[in-house]
Image (cartoon, helix red, strand yellow):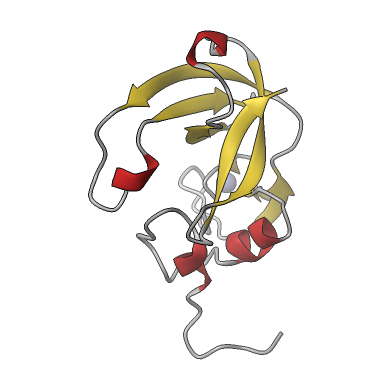
Length: 143
Ligand SMILES: [Zn+2]
């Protein structure tokens, strides 16, 4: 793939894209391949999700990618009945935080999961998802 003048791959992420130009654009290319990626500082080992290009702990910019794989534990969730501008069509949906022991992933719970099935501490996996408008995101599913 050739160098683009403006690397705006992040436009493809999320219902409404907020950040179109970042140093971590490979995240979106990986997501297109079904992989959810974070970054890990090669100096101190701290893991970041969403991916960061710079480590706030040791200030290194020496990062490597890792895949968010396996399962995490549901730490918190909240059902949204009202959303910000641009998200109206998606409502209602559940936002959640899943703890992967080393890093945490903030995202949405798959709409296929019924409310009564959602329990704090349950095991979940993070999977790539294509939205109706062809944008990409990821959702949590039961592991
Ligand atoms: Zn570091």
